[in-house]
Image 1 (cartoon, rainbow, N blue to C red):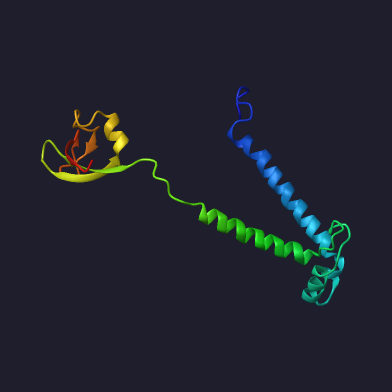
Image 2 (image 1 turned 45 degrees about the vertical axis):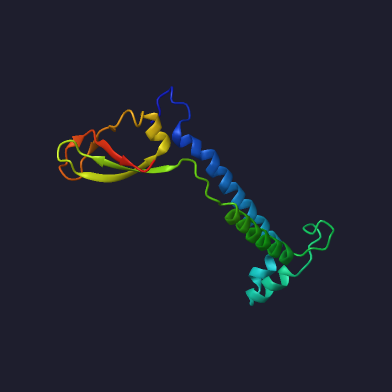
Length: 154
């Protein structure tokens, strides 16, 4: 139950989106069934009736240029393929940060291990002047320590 000051929080933000999606799906279904026609579902051979309705020209659907529902289906498939190709082609990787591999050393057991971190993180913490990192657990002795930077590839 919501408190009187919790006006339309988390759960209520979902309702308008789901209503819009539901309404849109109902409209698409309704118009698709309207285009296909009642004779498709009352016919004994549904597939041939569906094929015939896809090749029939509907004056209210064609916008006066003579398109049939099959043309809209073909255009839709072509546009989905073109959109997918553009999406895949534009998915180039841009390196936002440069990675650096750092050799860390436990001050107690002297165990060394590698970690990768960004160069900007190293610079922001004051490296090379500051050579210790925030607390981490040593993989060998299992103590929480502030490991020292033994070596980097910067």
